[in-house]
Image (cartoon, rainbow, N blue to C red; front, side, top):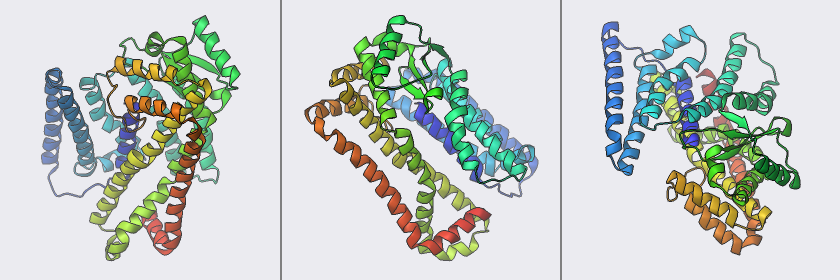
Length: 418
């Protein structure tokens, strides 16, 4: 659920950045009446559904949750365009931070009343959200002061390396791992495989909804390992090592670097997409200052961003998760610790048979590990295939941009003006 929520927040940010304000001839009183009517209907419907949702089947519950999430984006877009919130909010603060906070007044009630998120999960979302907001505010401040320097990209990267992990560990419900047996077990395993962390943390979630482990930070002095207390309660020591070996796989295979390449290819993907969309309709480009084309560009930008993150980025994310599973098998020479851990997680969360767009479903991962044990030598080929496929994807985008370089410069000019 965490990946979905981050994707939703990113999409809301894009909508806030690129949604134009419509100049309408309706009276202020009429717009105010419609606005309050919209607010009342939304929250009354949400409150009513939250009381009835326990009576629905799991499939119906998922359907209504997704419908309300879709409605939240539609209402958010209406607020920014039809109700001209973009103009109002930009008068208060330069940038898109306020519009993102306005989206939260739809998003958080849905998560609280329909998804029943725990306090621990809420703190985790906030911890991931704060560095993002801080980075946006720094960017906005530099633009307001008209300060530009060639090292802004390096500054953002250093922020991710050093400052973001600090914000996260200070916001999340974390406590250092104190269990002497588990701490010794984990530290010895990390030392054996030459992996260092600044600290090992436990995420405390009293509502028993969080079963996870992960890494925060990239370089050892600012890198932290964490487990949820719920996960440690259901796993045996060898199963904990199976999960730990999976996390070590992410470090050893440098997945963060490769995922950065996927994200850095995003602007190239946008340019290629606009070339193929607008090149056959090049006669429309001369009207790019018109409101209709402005809305069309904003809409396409948002849709393409969502498609890229949901399918392209998610595809490579799934492959890297699979590679980390294989690395667990490689380190332990045994697939059973991670398989048993996955089975226990699936039973505890009741998601054993559920599909996942970013990690593969738990049952899919178990079947893959069972197959991988029989075909162990193909691990290196699998690793090479992922990297080669990513490089080919980037090369194709760059080749199209070079081949249509005249159109590329034209679209860049439009985006700058936009």
